[in-house]
Image (cartoon, rainbow, N blue to C red):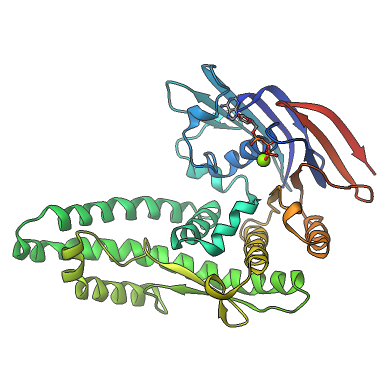
Length: 366
Ligand SMILES: Nc1ncnc2c1ncn2[C@@H]1O[C@H](COP(=O)(O)OP(=O)(O)OP(=O)(O)O)[C@@H](O)[C@H]1O
Ligand SMILES: [Mg+2]
């Protein structure tokens, strides 16, 4: 799929601007704080239904204005799509796909897919399990509404179980009632884990291939799921239920549920060594890039459409060889890349010079 047009009205530091992107490489170039990332944030909004910075919708509205509006036009293989999002200070947002209001955010996920990569994504490799769960959750949700709803259900049941563990003063009474919650939790959890296992199974060979490409075959990347697993959904359900029962005393003492998909993680290794513990900064960065780039293929396989690639300020982070390899790979997708400066002499691309929330200049390079 390809974005043909993006319109921003009172969104972040844009009052009114319209981008007509080409289907190849689009470069947003400009000094710091001009609105490059803001434009990518708007694009990504249509893929995940919120800001990737995890902030409230009203904070996306131009300072001091009552409302904002962003619109995107997308060309797919066999159809065209227009998505409008209206943001308000005082009301909930409203999103329309081809002029029809959507009821749930999940409806966006299967319509438009984008992959975003920025230097900060290094946290995917370096930081807490939460970052890697978020990576799986966002990715799987973009191609499966069921998964997204399962996550919501799981959170509710988990909150209920945790409340019981924390508030119930009578342990015997709790022991008698917790079984219902264990079963409900294990049931939804087994769905979630099954999706994640399938996702990692599909992701692993792709990530391995891309990582080998970026490192000139020097490094072998491997991924595995940590948490309760099993061969089938029933297996996972039974294993998790048993574990929840075994862990009851511990959970009761802690006042919350210590196991389940909300605690699981992805173990990432390079040449059989844990990346978090042993890899250099550059290796970790490349590893995060390999994972994110793999999302492109995963999404394409799931939807039959190529997602859009958004690269925010990543060139300055890579050495010359990896930079060129990345740009070569990006050629397979519609790409929007932001940068402060870069020599694009030999590259076919469309350049947008961004100044203070405006396109100051548009240059078509052949
Ligand atoms: N709601 C808002 N209304 C108006 N301006 C905003 C709003 N939110 C953020 N901004 C401004 O947008 C400006 C540009 O931000 P953006 O992150 O897009 O810059 P950038 O071009 O990506 O810069 P850099 O090269 O440093 O990454 C910031 O200076 C910020 O103050
Ligand atoms: Mg930026």
